[in-house]
Image (cartoon, rainbow, N blue to C red; front, side, top):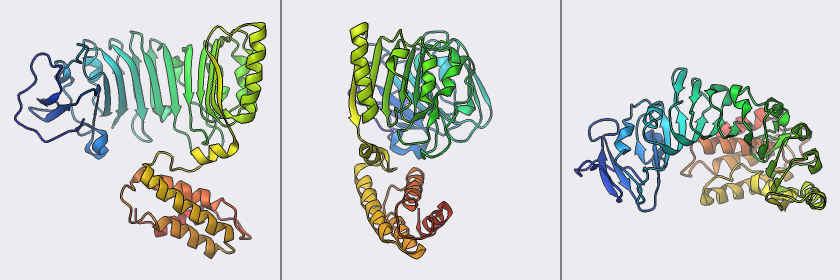
Amino acid sequence: MTEVPNDNHASPPSSIREDGRYTIDLTGSRSHTLVRQPGVGSLSIGPSDLGKKADLHVPPDAIIDWTVFNPFATPAGSPWPRFLHYTGSDAGFFNWAQTRPIEEMTWAPVLSADTVVDASESIIHSLHIGLGQSGARLSLKLPKSSFRLSVSGDLSRFSATGDIPSSLAVAPRTSRRKSDPSFVLPDLGELHQVSSLTLQNTPLGQPISLKCLDRFPNLDSLSLWGNFCDLESLARHARLTNLELRFMPDLEDLPALDVWPLLDGFIAYNVEEAGGKRLRQQMKARAKTRPWAGYVSVSQLRKPEWWMTEYGRPFSSWPKRLAKIANEAYDAALAALVQARSLADAEAAITAFTVRFNTLKGIETTEREDLGEAVWQLSQSEHRIDQPITEEMAQGWFDAAREY
C-alpha cells in the first residue's frame, strides 16, 4: 500500500469493501489518494521522511480527519483498516475510536508540549505507544473497555491513569552494551497493578534489573525477552502461574522451577544451553509430582558463539545486501587489528572499515549509529598494541573518515 499522486477518482461511497484507489479528505479537501490492495488490512500514516514505511504522508503536526475511514470495511464487513500505524501529534483517533472501534493502534507521538489525552471512552483492543528519545511527556487516561497495552522507548516520557489493561508489554530503550550498569525501569504508576506483564530487551544489550518487578504485586503471568540481571528476585513472585523466557543468554541466577508452586505453564525458547538443560531436568521432575496443566517447552538451546553471531554485531536488522557488506568489512577490520602493533595500525584498520560505507546508498542516521557501535566493538577487540584503544580515539577516527 503506497501513497500516489492525487487523481480524479470519486470520493468513497457509503460502504467500501473493494480494493482500488480512493480520493480522501484526510487533511483537507481531496488531500490524499488511498490505495487499497488485496489482502492488506493495515495502514500507516506519518511524515514524508518515513518514505515507503508510510502509506499516506502527513506532516507530524497536521490535523487528521479520522472519520474518512468510516466508509471502508473488510470483505467480511468489519472496519478497515484493521491495524493503524500513526506517527504524529494528532490524538483525535482516540475520540474517533469512541464510535468506530480500532482493532490495533500503533502510535509514535510527536509532541512539542506535554500532552494529556483522555482515552477512557475509546474502544481500542490493542494499543502500542512508541516514545522517541526526545520530546514532551504524554499522560494518558486509559480506556475502560478491555484492551492490551504496550509501551516502548523512553518510558520516562509516559504516564497512565484509569483502568488497568488486561496485559502490559514494556520495551524500554536500553544501551547496546552488555557491560553498562543495569537499567532500572522507571515508575509506571497505576500500571504496576497489572497481572500479566511482558518485559522486552535486546539479547546482548544493557541488562534490565528484575528488582523492578517488586512493584508489581499482582503478577500471575510473566514473559521475559532478552538480557536481564537480578533473576534471583523472581523467587519473590510465588503467585506466578505462567512464565516465559525467550532469547535470554544468561540464566545462571534463575531460581529453580519449584519456587513457583502454582506454575502451570512454562516456556524457555532460544536460551543459553547450560541453563536450558537445567530447566529441562526441573520440568520433568516437576511433572512427576504435579502434572503440568498448561503448555510447557524448553527448546532451541544456544551455545555462546550463537549469541555473538546472531546479535553480537549491530547489523542484524540491516537489509541482507548491506549486512553482507558490513560483515565482510568488519571481518577485514578484525583481522587487521589482530596484527596491529601501533595506534597508527589500529587507525588504519578502523579508517578502512569506515570509508567502505562512504559510497553506499542507504546509510542514514540509524545505520550511522550502528557503524559507530561497530567501531567501538572493533576498538575493544584483540590487538598487539601495548596500550588500550580508547572509545574517544576510535570515535575520532570514525568521524574523521566518514562522509555519512
